[in-house]
Image (cartoon, rainbow, N blue to C red; front, side):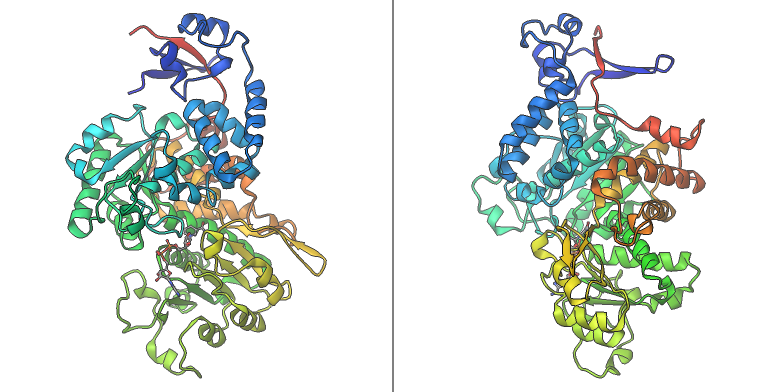
Length: 568
Ligand code: NAI
């Protein structure tokens, strides 16, 4: 484990790091390495003399050079690799480079850019990061966790790589996603010294990967059923002992596992599933902003969810809860939802309905009374006259002209959210949606789309980017060492984000803040989440100062701390 301690002199207000590492070891430790910014005193004390070019540089000078190097790369993959190499060499410089140009670097390092890297993981592999727990090592989970780099862990992002960003089973390549999520967390103030990405390698069912001679994961069909559940249980049990205060962020698990895992462990150990809860929070924040802008009360909104999987149901659940928060009776709220999956609208008596879809199924007799025998999306839209249409199906172009025009015919300001990622899986192109609704649609997408010009007006397309939600939730949880992420905390996050909706100031503006605002937004959201954790009685730590200062004090900033040698 890495030997260092962060010390803070509260009186003087400065922070330094004590470590027993010296010389080359320091230069290859990305969270301690300052490269040419090591001062002469540090070079002397830390056995670095002569190991670096003579001139001592400032972080800004290093940043100028890094920007020049980065800008010389032209392809997305080259830029991604450059950023990752920097991440592996000097994290402070890496975070500064990202922050300096978030608009360009965030979509590269996170979605949608990271999906290309996931696919190329075994081919582009250079340096490991985090921990890999392969199923054959299931008896050695404790030993693997002890091999972590940092002692204290507050946040762990784990994936099994089965359902990556709408590109399916990516096996070991899925590891790029927890790494990317943690980068975003740290951009927003979560201390990277206290986080860890973990790959739960339970095999892959992707034949291309299984047949790829360079594939780096466990070359085996995915384990399933009891074996899988036992493996997850062993993992959680080990985490509970090693990191009792950490939050487990479950990332990109397949639908059948994601919800079960969250429901099983949510009350046992602080757990958060970004695909379900993070997506739901950010999407609901956009929807609440759209609902306010549309001037139609939430109780009158009719919601069609196309793609009744993990994300779709997560969003339906939160919208349902938002209705309850607005004082609508449970049965009345349920009646406002229609779920459509690959076999059409979900009705009672259908085969293969899962437990989570059940509360939303419609009465078969109600659908039988329709004026058509069809049960597909177009038929549903024509019969139901939805005001909100959400797409989580990965079916490109499903929101076609007939569907969208039918929706626009019966709604003054249709709210249309094709959320599937990446763009090639998106249910509708915003340009078309705007054209077919004559500029009336309030749109939010999953991946970024360029602005759309229509009849001389520019429309900024809102991206429901989870980066707007999960960092703030994480900050609030970590600041209070919450034992649980309660529904109220998610609701608090939702409201905090939607309060910051630019459309509330100006109708031509987007439904959500820009991703470039995430560091500041996360502090605001973290504040709301932490306050709610305390109200809900799940906080293990309470502030002894005003709340905003409390959350701010917990946030990490990427600047060089002085490094001092400690005697062993
Ligand atoms: P999932 O696999 O759990 O659900 C997809 C659902 O779509 C399944 O129920 C499937 O049966 C259904 N489906 C497939 N083909 C269909 C068809 N032809 N017609 C109707 N339904 C069909 O996947 P998950 O996790 O719900 O993700 C879905 C999409 O949502 C992905 O593209 C993912 O990237 C996106 N998503 C977006 C997020 C965001 O930030 N906006 C975050 C999380 C997910």
